[in-house]
Amino acid sequence: MPKPSRILHVTERSLWEAARERGTYEVSTRGRTLREEGFIHFSTRAQLPRVAAFLYGDDARADLVVLEVDPELLDAPLRYESVEPGGEEFPHLYGPLPVGAVVRVTPWTAGSPGD
Image (tube, rainbow, N blue to C red; front, side, top):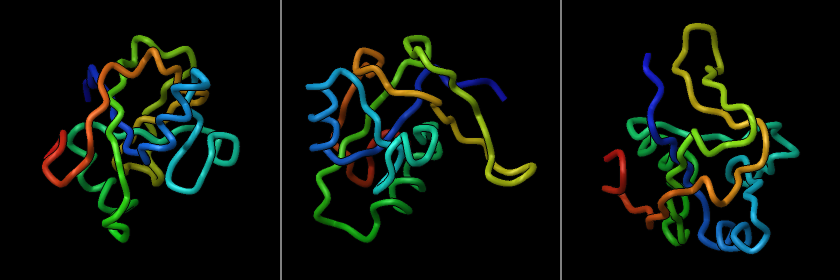
């Protein structure tokens, strides 16, 4: 499977804004940090709607954004891994996300990138 030119991460706007102040984003997934999880969860464009619904489908009030990341601008290892043998592979970043690797930020709604 060819690797995508962009990987995506859905997050709360407030978490992204705090990361911009620090220079790095270190949230793995909803309610879990990079330190706790060991990596940051990403999605491909095709995976994003499913992932966003799974993570935030229970919170219609969440102010969410999609971070579009250029893998060429990452400092830490990026691996495509599945949770079960032969399963779907997801991009995982094994280190902080530098804010400079984020090439686009868009509000998330059903119909955002990937829908």
